[in-house]
Each structure stands twice: as structure tokens, then as C-alpha cells.
Length: 115
Image (cartoon, one colour):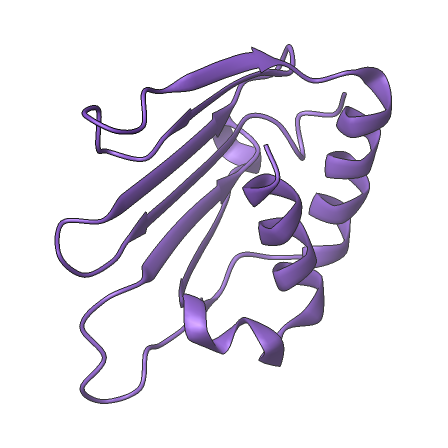
């Protein structure tokens, strides 16, 4: 796995105290935390080689970090996605509702959400 794609950190803050956090470390260990421990306990596991390769390919397709601002009046579902580590880290900040405007970013986010 390349330093260019792992680790990954995905955080979305929604409305009504909704939070989703997905972390994948350089060894492929992941943790998914919905922020609501009363009904959804954090989940964790290890990704297999095929899933790691898919994440790496999707991360390579998104290119450089960038921002997609939320439309005026949007108050929730703002995402911060960090891809890679150290000096190679790329940061993406965007409104989740605008993902269809950026298909490579949308595909990476959808793959992470499947964990």
C-alpha cells in the first residue's frame, strides 16, 4: 500500500448530533463509529488485499485535495476526508450533497461508507 492512499480518515457531521467517522490505518485496519454508542457500537476489522487495492485505486483517482463548499444555508453533512499521511496527506472538505459533481471523490466516499 502506498503512502499516497493510507491512512484515510473520513468525518461527516450531520444534523441532530449525527456524526460518522471512518478511519483506515496503513495496515488496512478500520474503525467505523457512528457517534451513537447507544444503538450503534463502533465496528472494526481488517480489509482484505482486494479491498485495499480498490481503496488505493480510488484514492489515486481523486487527485489533489480540494474544497466543495456547501450551498448557502446548508448546516449539516459537511465532510472532511484525509487521504495519505505526513507530507503526502491530501485534505478534501465538501458538502455531502454535492458529491455527484465530483464522481472520483463520490466513488471513494461510497467505498468507505460500505465498511
